[in-house]
Length: 268
Image: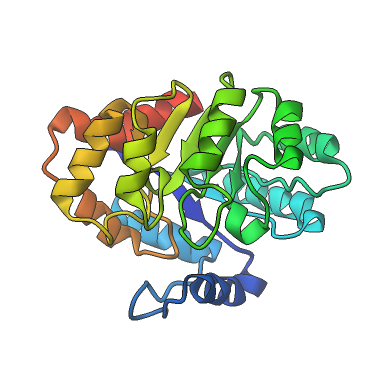
């Protein structure tokens, strides 16, 4: 079975260790015990994706300050070019940029098809006026993969996402972590089956719910709306693939989640 990892982070080698440690601190977890002890470098990522049997990988990262945006996008585009066809990349944007339109044009010129937002780390709400203006400028030209769900914040939880989804019906949004990280079932109850422009990825989900609950959430959204993702380097892709393949799904459901849905969205 072909597998596409729709949620994989990668960092420049010079800052990878600091970036991975910063993410662990943000979530109050320890690398090597509660999460994987991985670094997120390009070479390490390729090695672990190969070991997991993953055929293609969607790379992403998020700019925590506006001046990082174009540098990160150039790095992600370069990673895709140097991957011998294994990787595609989404870029990043920040609503506090003084030139959002220019950043979007640059991202599109690089051949990037979408944008990764982590509103909690980036420090903005999805339904804030400045974010809504950014989405209006993008005008359906890009997909948005969004970290969603964290009870510590009110940036990208269901109540914020519902406003965005209704306002931009021609834009495709992917709610990461089953549209509700650490509040998976609440997110599913509030979001599943309600928006034609919403997909979800199942990254950073298998560690927090039972296989039976995971399958219930997948079927609530519909297997044609769910994408496989590892959230590397938070988790080892080998373990994430193993956990996914062990879920009590039908072969057709598994195939849609592993490859078909992502291939359709990305035009593969």
